[in-house]
Image (tube, rainbow, N blue to C red):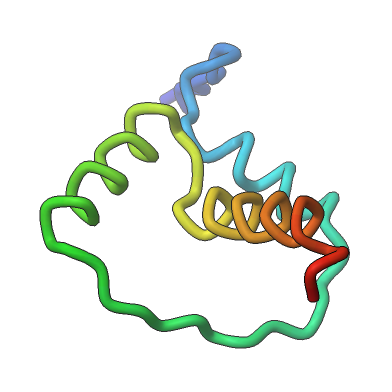
Length: 75
């Protein structure tokens, strides 16, 4: 009985980009950020992140970094 080998075609595995990004990113100490936002806003944000295949944490981190850059002189 021959063992069947399945070769995954490029783009078939949805977690590849996430895995590659995790390998490339240096691991930094982290802190948990917890906040309350309206339920509907959270739902829309989560769906938008899923449809764009981006991590919610990465989006929030980018927004914070952009805000800090813009407001650096005011801090």
